[in-house]
Length: 363
Image 1 (cartoon, rainbow, N blue to C red):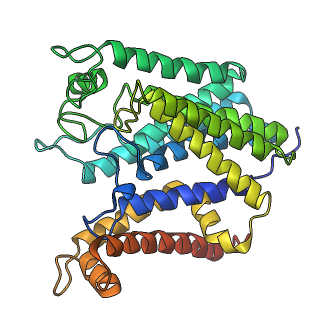
Image 2: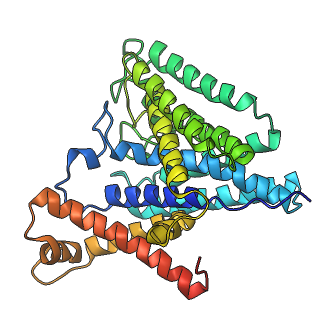
């Protein structure tokens, strides 16, 4: 049996920061939102657009570490793959359940693909690459996926549109989604977690897998974080240059967007590794706890936020509106909305930390 693989706690902190960012973006106090904390309407890049790619990069890093840990415990490749398949299937099914309550088209269709479903698909594909175990092929696979996706969207379009059309209705990815999933998308025209755009999203997860393998072999090297940060910034710069020909677009998960957002996520992870190393300080324990229970925290925060938005309250349209007025009513609308979202994320982190104390985990 191989030596045990220790948990990379700085990765948990970075995952916690990412989940907190998800909550801030998804749980504003009102419709008054600063542009940086809202997704770009179509082409463009905001802070909010960096959150989901960061989670996919973390997924890839975590997959590499978890696979090595399971192999060190003596599990067979078959056992690991069955566990990965069951986990992905459960996550996909949970995503469908969430969407059954949250996203419905006017005709009543349930959204088939969403954030949790995309995470499930990328997780399953990443575990397949780990089973194949060809580390040298993984960077090439990511590059080929991004180039192939660029070629598809740059040379093709929906019928009746010019080749390379990237408008919501005219691009190839949205047309394919309408052909195969009409009535089961986020909007009648386009789904930001559609079928074809899952390819570059998986390439984003592969960037994390490549980084995870490097960390496995060099985590004791103090220079590992610097090299990872340099790699991330280099990829981000490459994506930024590519955006001149293939613009940033989260809705389509364009290749330039995947490279820039994924590269910045790697740089963010490197910063956490450099700042916290193997022993993060107690001050970031709530974020670390949030990162250890990321998917549960994301789902439960969304449920709690939904309840606040729908429960009635005296003198207000909802309990959320009542809390917003009581706690942050003295602020300008956008500032109040952001303060509510940040407070909600902080409360989620504290709940995650408190839950660990209740369950006896006091790291």
